[in-house]
Length: 383
Image (cartoon, rainbow, N blue to C red; front, side, top):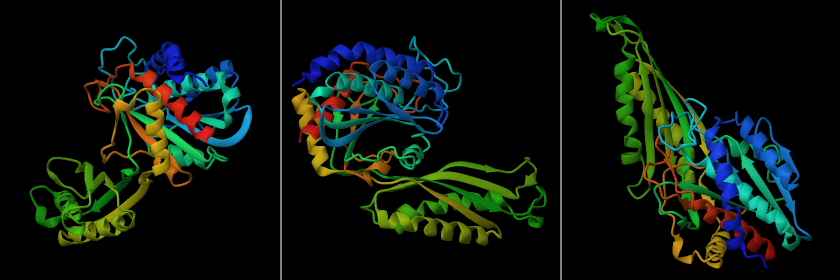
């Protein structure tokens, strides 16, 4: 049986090299053309057949010498519109974009895992799909490639996300719901313009929008149980054209996060009721555009146990910790509603948080991630 930890250590320099290459060339969601090409180039070198998705992303198949089940390993590949200020020597060369969430690490780790798994495929009983997914930051990529047959034939799936502020190499995982549904909404408020000195002749959309911002917060405080976590965020509010004109239009954009699926379906109705009646109180009109994005991410208990055991086999038992619930969305959730899946957090040992322009990680964590990808696949297929 392969010594996975030793193999992960040997492939680590390659993984670091690929991670730094991806980091230098970040690309936004559904525009990861160079990234997809580089991954394809590496899979060609390994002799791993693959299929591209439209417009970006791909899946490779590592077929074992013996028949068996199929597990997919997933890495996301898109970057963020963040101007990098990390100070690393391999900083972004694509002005205004940065791998500020760590997806460069995920792609590099999965390439390292693919290299190992391909080298020991005579030991595999079944197939490992290495899935490089676009557009996670839009919460659209997983569903987009699922529709293109990305996980057809798969019996299970596993993924990871690096978290900069967790201890380097920590493996955080729990069964059940660990990531919430994460949605997008836009509210438009319509009024009537007038001179700023004669507000009585207009209908002020700015005042109505401000009241809507405050009233939406009663969803979490009065529509939900205090024991049920829910976040209603207004991220942007744009209103008005000039300092001395009563605004006739306002636009709010934001996100909603929650864990209860029944209440998830009721949220648009709650928001519409509050927004419309609040606007009406100020003689305005409000209209809601609500878009369901990421679903609730559910870790399968049996696969979660398998991941914990795999970490123990690698000698990382002391680095395993329960995953604390977070309100951050993750579109890996789409896979969990199709086949049994497990999703783990990987400690990056940095200081700046995710999405920060100063985001960095300790690259020693990549060796742990590569080993875990490989061991999980081996253990699942050997069952």
